Image 1 (cartoon, rainbow, N blue to C red):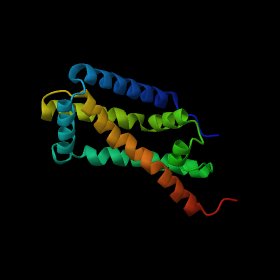
Image 2: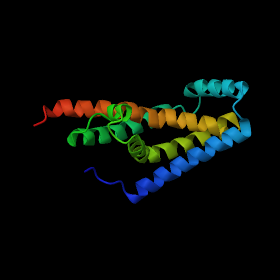
Image 3: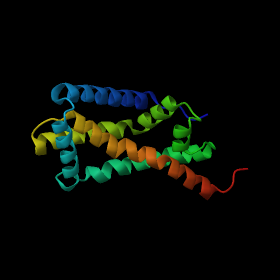
Image 4: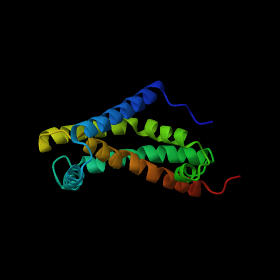
Length: 163
């Protein structure tokens, strides 16, 4: 059986999910989902990597990769199928698998929300909660989801055939 997450990991994950849900609701209430809003959102997102605070486009994915490496190696030790295989095939409870991902990346998600909030207030001089959520998920959760299975496969191949 895998080690249980600590109470603080679970708390941080809950705070992150709650903050994300509130920001999504706030974004929809403040700005709606019109074509103009979507155009501004994508324009702002594509302008960010070349602007101030671009270090977070490297920092957050690296932190997510470290978490994915840790969990992927644990999956290999436990003889589990790669993460995305389990998630997409339904061979595990998808809700539990997504909870694992959020618990593993909770601190990274909160850090991303804070960094994007600082970016918005200093550079954009406004607040777009929806953009904050999209950037945070793209830089923290997506790399984790994509890399965990890869790291599991690498760890399994390095350890040799299972006995």
